[in-house]
Length: 243
Image 1 (cartoon, rainbow, N blue to C red):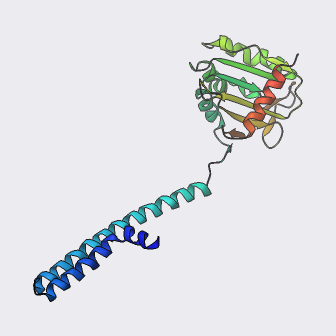
Image 2 (image 1 turned 30 degrees about the vertical axis):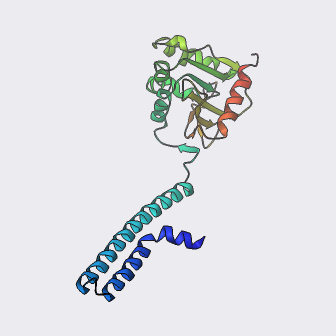
């Protein structure tokens, strides 16, 4: 078996040896002149060297590909990323990537008091032609803030009918998130997640009731993360509850 492998893998070397032996025999029989014999052997050796050079190049290419794959396996793309700066711009890009429903769960609404921030985070989602529906599940304590600061701005947006009436719930969890659909045909979602309280959110205008919180950091939860089905389950659990 090993002999057969040698024949297949090193046929060029065997051909050089065989041709050299034949040449020597012909030379001994005075059929092949010495000058032709040397030329023949040199030619065969050159062909063998060229063949080996080709194998060497293929080996180097294969080695580079293997090392590239190894680096890829050693450095997997993270499932969650921290967004510390310019998260309003990141929120706008997030809204524009939506391809179906957008969910807002227990999110701090204080930032929507600013028209500029509202335009980035919510108006961009409402006026995104790919957005089909926007649903809010919020704490009861945010109802007054919604009616005063958020609802009037929504009424001025093209596509305001996409925004469903908020669902007011007694939410126990200290997390909030926005979730979007990445596909119009498949259930593929991503989320921007925040945590109520320091260091993720800061209290703004403490003398105002209900208290208004602004996010400092956002966690970008990608579609492959195991958090996505958990967040989806959390939203659906509160959505089916009665007020």
